[in-house]
Image 1 (cartoon, rainbow, N blue to C red):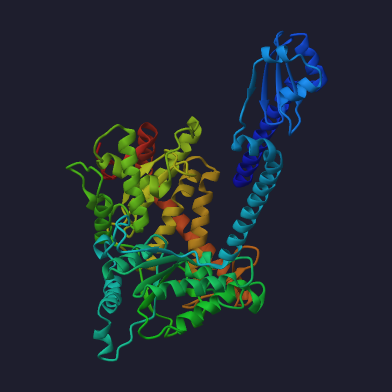
Image 2 (cartoon, rainbow, N blue to C red):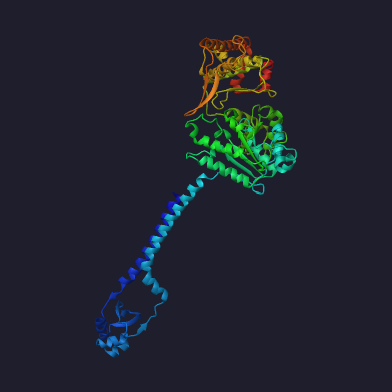
Length: 608
């Protein structure tokens, strides 16, 4: 649309220029009045002519009253001879100054040919613009099947080189990928012993764990070109476009070998074949087939390593994961406390930090955070510092940033009434009290009734160390903590509010997992119930296929209800027996709105 508007504007300018030229010529012809040679003879005899200018055959006449006239003379005879033949007085002819003006070649051609050339020029320009637009559309059509892959060259100084030093943690993954780097640098070392390096490396891990960063680090360590493309950029509406782009992508990578070809979000095109609409003729499946062919056609000495990333390895086609294609899987886990501290140090580069800052403490407060979450945390802390007009980032900005990333921003406009504030205070006090009274729960870090995200209040409890396994006792106590707010509202106010709805949802989901997923029901025994599968039709839907009878279904419901009921009784006994502590916590929350860990421990210890 922009090019079309530009072309129309240029055409209008040309049209206006042509109109202006024609108006100039037409205006000049209108100023000169025509007269015959007989009339000119009469005017000379009456002494009305002051000057005559001859331009070729044209005769321009200037009268004494200031008017202008024109006539045309004969080709062969001079003007004076013609006038004498027509009866003009020779003496009076000599009294009139006659000038002969030589017309230039340029003006002659302009005057005679311009009226014919301008329309032709106008038509030619119009056709040129039309052909230019058609050619541009044709180029776009021919380029539609070209690959959208981007290349980062190691010789390009604009691109910052990424190495393993820029990736904190993930030591096992880096050890696996060092073999790929060594193969790209010294392939003869492996060929001498008959070793074959994997053609494809699949990075598997939750979002934000650094899969793309690790792939770039491999390219930086090996100092080879890095081609990167997303799986969704292969698939198009038109049949055959995805397969054509796959061929073009692999062809470009082979030309610059040794190289790294990184395909992000492989599950966009690598799903099980035959699982979607369209069967075997689905465009996505044709694209996947082409990828399988290209990877299987790699020669041993091609020295092009395909690295892909996904967080859904369970839905990938088995043919994609067989040896000879993606035959090496590298698992990327969420960082532990030591890795989180190193990641925070990397993202702290370029940010002025206060001298008393303790990144270890921030790492302790962020279990379950990915590398992307920690990067966002440091960025939010820098934004907080800039908002407060500070020159350094301190713990006063880092600690609130943890809660902002974890729970969302504070909703200061969400003002509770006195009654709602009182209910929220006792509700959160119930959660905190039950949590602190049970032996296998995580310590309470903070209790607040300031709204964050969708919650009117929250009890923040964080583990002291990373946990990979959870026991049944810990799950049961977690259920009691979830029911602490519900039990407190029932005890203090005699009725329940909608504030417990999210707690009940989490408790019900956890209790059902204890029975159907974890085999922790004493009545039903160590087995799982229901097979989950993902259906893709008009959207994503997780369905559970029942592999048990209606009798077992009723027993599952009974066991889920029993887990929740027992948790409610545990929470109710705690808040009833420790009602004084419950009231102290709630009253302190109403007064301060927020209780930190140190103050909460003092209240639980009975200190003033």
